[in-house]
Length: 200
Image 1 (cartoon, helix red, strand yellow):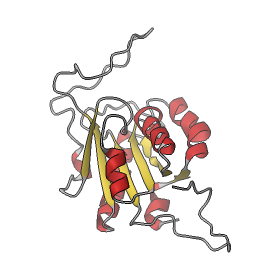
Image 2: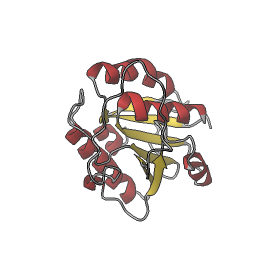
Image 3: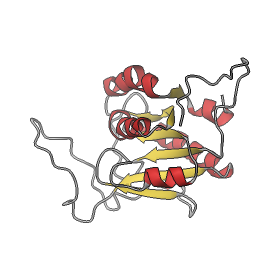
């Protein structure tokens, strides 16, 4: 798959941002464990924008993949030795269920992961390739963890990436702005939710 640097043809004509037959939406970790402390966008705004995208992609007959972290006993989760303890998760009842705003349907492909990225140890790449997908639109929480890791994996697998930048957020503004300004422009294209919905 070829990496596209922009959305212009050689003749200078503007090509559509999305080919619905070859583009998948990948939503990262919008599940019930979501807390309240995010920046620069609130969890509510991210969920609302992600819901717009999921509904739009489904209406177009496009491939929607919903990704969540899930475990029965947490013994299959990574537990590296760290200098400081990681933030505690919001482990409420049903913590691994998707937020209701996404309106999970039978046509959605569900990925359960045990780590930050959605490709390692899952069938995401297999399902995308069997459907001849060459592009993913990615959104979710958090920008610098699950979204960034999955995007880097997608880049290394040769996929084109479109970042729905206001349908994702970080644990801090600095985290989000780092990947927004340094990493994402080097591996994909950045668009707002409305630009994606309008196909520009």
